[in-house]
Length: 96
Image 1 (tube, rainbow, N blue to C red):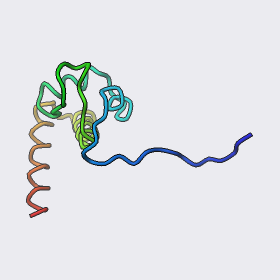
Image 2: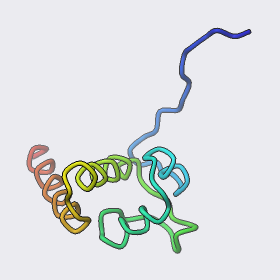
Image 3: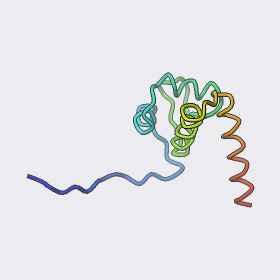
Image 4: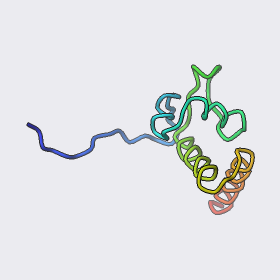
């Protein structure tokens, strides 16, 4: 019996793409939620049609932030999109 309790995984680079299923599983959201996030402009998938969509690793953070804003702070998706855009601008200014 193996009693080793270490976690194994793969380190993903920022430029790598993940599938819709991986994004949903990692963020614990449904496909319909991801589709709404794409429609609202929060996510920008690569590929045509939701069955072929791939997402950057940065999408994980965006989904989790949008869900936090919506669930915990009562912000609608349009407000979450605006907040994420502003956070992106702040991060860009800080990088400069």
